[in-house]
Amino acid sequence: MSSSEENVQKSGSLYPDLVRSPQEQFTENGAVEKIDETFQQSDEKADIPVTSQPTPIEVPISQDFVSATEEQTILLDSQRDEKQGAITKQPGSTPKKTAPQFSSKLCGCCEEDLMCMKALCLPCASVYSIEKELSNETKATACGISYFLFVGMYLAGQVLLFTGGLMSGNVMAYTGCCGGACLVCSQRRTISKTYGIKSNAFSDFCISYCCVCCALVQHEREVKSGREKIV
Figure 1 (tube, rainbow, N blue to C red):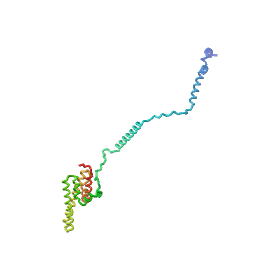
Figure 2: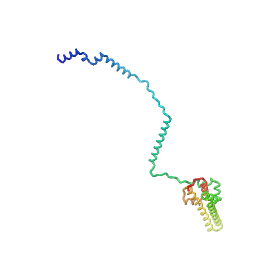
Figure 3: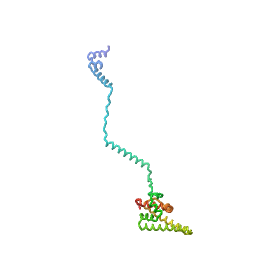
Figure 4: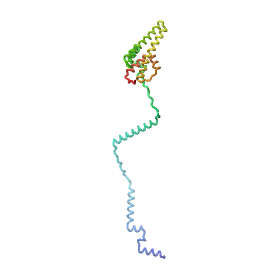
């Protein structure tokens, strides 16, 4: 037997705890049994199935918070629409504004029976009423008399045409007709300027020459409509 083996045997006989394994020491002290029981209890707890779930807690939301959230959503939507409109809008482009028109149609003269009869049978009275609304009594009287003279000249020219005075009849008839048309056209231009209505001289004269009764009714309805004057 070697010296190292003899030393091991001697140390084992003197100190038996040192040559024992840790398992044997824990077994004698009872520590192993306690540790095993602890691990066994933990395993049993882990095997227990979870049957009940935790109930969720409902937090009440106030009505003020809901309304504030809706207002914020509406504000964000409006801001987004404004940004999109600013992007799509071309720089320097302005929307076109339509010029105001007469409040009544030219062919709507039959809607006002009294005005229509007055313009057809006594147009000088219609001219007087229109000019009185546009300017003053004196100018209205002068316009009414002037239109009465133009109408008389036209009727005299028609009489001369039937009595044999062809040349003189045509001159008088056309002079009276054109003079009356110029007077009505002047009133139409004044109305357009006063109320800011889009028009031009050529169309105004054609309407005043060919549709004088309809134009007079339209003028009188316009000046009596209560529309705000620009000039």
